[in-house]
Image (tube, each protein chain N blue to C red):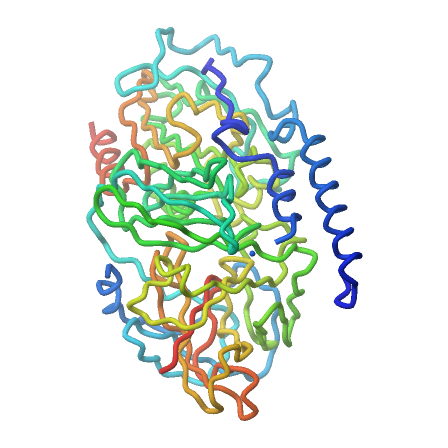
Length: 220
Length: 328
């Protein structure tokens, strides 16, 4: 609005802006941006070789299988949609130890969550240290800075920002919401790869609890 | 298969963006003492740049980072090509924060619905928003390390932080501060000046500028500022500091190394030569450039000879956040 606009002009502009704003509200519809279908697991997530239920969301309960789209090894691929692969909890199931996996650390993150960023800043180093011992890390990203479902672009920015060398996947419809509400992050689950039982469930980045627990579990 | 659980929708959750935009288009109105002992470790030094927006050769001044007690570290006169954040993390015991209440209004006293808020420690964040009448009522599920209440998101609204204490607390009325539209923001130059509102940043060719590209799209990486009303923002500004001028700036979390010089309009008409101190607030849990939830001095300045502006004379802006000023 030009500074020299008269009061009538300014008043008309205000009415117009209100009208446009009101129309925009009316026309908006749902607040949730559309999640691309290829990022959703609407077709189910079957795994023939996976523990039978019952499944649960608490410690000592068996983790239900879930599938995501993500970068299995972000450090080795271009961070774009064409590099996305299906990543399932079943991929980490290792009852005989043939895959060399003892524990799985599953983490939820959101772009708006600064504590999540703090956690991921050191996670690649942890992966370097613990992968040879049998730990696998699967990070998931569920929302962006505005609490919209995370996108491939968000995931790409995330792995580039933190130089992630562990699997990072998108969870735009927050499948892991069964374990914690979308309002709170991060969530960390430590899962026994031999049984897919949840050994530890932690709300928040509790490094002083998490890593000693993992040390003890790997030594067991 | 895990039961599907979608993020919460419009009611009780984040509003449609149209609501935020509609609202913005309508016509419009000692806790810190523990941090003061934190000392600087170093100024800018060489390390791998993460996101270089500009690079150059040649000389440039390097200024040190301010200590928590207001002392400036010395400069070494070198021109690093990249920077390592000094880091301000200190270990702390978790705090049992109880119910947090607040009322969010705009500058004219009108309730602001659905303003993004967070209760964050350095270990965990809980997201919420003000309700239809601007009320906030949130209870963290666990103890938090260095908990702070943050209101605004650095995108549509300025983000400010209020340190929290143990137990239930009512933060009273807080004023939400909308940023100018992105289209009204100033484009960052590779070197030179960028102005928005009362603030002008000066960036040298040798300055490494790192943006928070997780939070901001490319088109949103423009300089925007909004004035913070001192009297109405005492909880965030902490009266013990005695701030007299304050602004919020975006893109939040943008870092500058060497620090960017700042010029701000002398709105309070301080006499020429008046010496001032400039502080930034840490709103990022990583505490890389500022301690979380509190303020740290980053520069000294003085009023220009003609009295029109306040210029930084030593130190500078290391990270874009809220900037507060007091006379020395």
